[in-house]
Amino acid sequence: MAVRKIVTDINGLKWDTSTWGGAYASHASIRARNIKFAPTLNLHAPGFTKPEEMRGPDPSIVGGYGGDLSFDVALRPEAAVATEMRYMLEQAGTLNKRAAASAKITAATSSTIVGLTADIGTYVVGDAVFVYGSGTDPQMRFITRVQDDVPAPLSTTLTVTPNFTDTPANGDSLRAVDTWTPKIGDPGAYYQFLMYQGGDATNSHLFTISDCSLANWKLSALAADSLPYISCSFKADSWTSTDSSAATLANEALSVGWPVLGDSFYVDNSAVAVESLEFDAGMDLQPYTATSGTNGRAGWFCAGCMPKLSIKPYHDVDWITRLTAGTTFSGCFESVNGTSRGWALWVPKLQVVSIAPDALGNKLLGDMPELLVCDPGKNADSTNYPLFAFAATSLGS
Image 1 (spheres, one colour):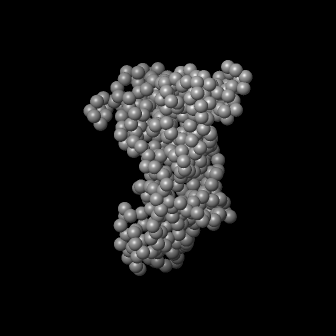
Image 2 (cartoon, rainbow, N blue to C red):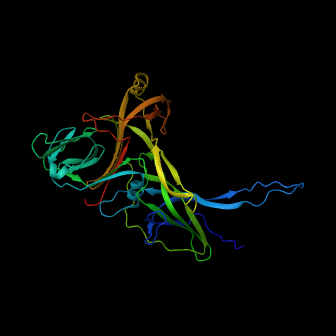
């Protein structure tokens, strides 16, 4: 036995991607907080009985490995470098990458933008758009309908929600945006994480955590003037443990994000004052069990999700009216930092199923609705809306 004196708040992460059981060789640093790993190991009790008194059980037989890794990363969309956030969420759903379209908007209304099909025709329902211009406020909105050849040949009209608060103008631009929508199926890649604990060559430890898949992600406690973080949890297929493995991690070439300030939550087309909000993707990650797997698995797959959105709005009798009438509405939150960076969340159909009036943090009354994420249905063209969509500015600004 060799006791190590490892300070618990000195730790770090590196990551890499590969195929299941593949080679991991190009690990990059992650700036993260609340890094936790719970290694697991199946121990099978033989359960033999004996014809003697007070003998006790036989030792358990070691079986397959597993584990749970979790950490928080700052929500910081980038227009110049790839981020680990994009790769993680790519595991969690369908990723649509839309290129920038500088000065390509030819016309607009409070709920539509028009451009040549060659410039904006790749967008689909559920994608986000980031609109900006020299005289137009930067805004992120989600597409609810795509109409080609309207109003002119070779043009495309994108209908968005919520309505623009500042109508775009001819010559305005679209920033490059990545949009994720949930899906069922296998992840596109698997992860290996190197979890370093301790800060010197003697009092240190390394977990090498392999063939991981994103199990769930959350936007937690997005309060006024707070820094937004994504809380990620992963399921691991295997791990190894090594002492004396201290490493100096290179800094990420990423910004530190920005606080939630000047950002709006929309109920349909109305901006509503909320003290805070949270979102839980509610992923259902399952093992792809197989006798051929080293640890009884040959991969992971997402069997679905049950997302949950929570908000803390100030009192408005409309919340009670929505509860009693059973009406549904869309919810959208955007956080834009100038004309180059932003992120947004859209849930197309919500229903208030209960209300718990209570004081908010400043002692003003809030209605605290419990929200049900409903089947969003289809648009006028029978195109499905996504259950939810999350978007962030991307490469190629």
